Length: 69
Image 1 (cartoon, one colour):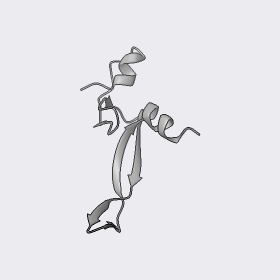
Image 2 (cartoon, rainbow, N blue to C red):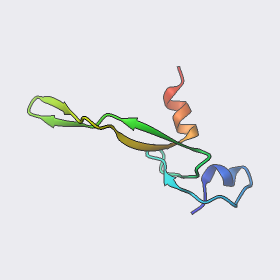
Image 3 (cartoon, one colour):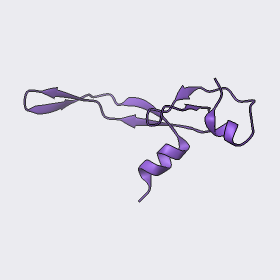
Image 4 (cartoon, helix red, strand yellow):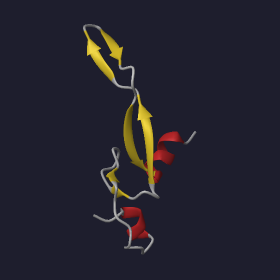
């Protein structure tokens, strides 16, 4: 599969490395951002947090939208 952002830039020579966890579009190495997220699990009326953070792939556009202030 091809990277969506590269196709918008008229570049078709890049291969996608992942799927954005926010919008579902394929992204390449240059347009992807890998973020860490805390994993939570519901336990009774509370929540337990994992000791090791998970990874999440997002496109740079979705990452900018999430982190804009």
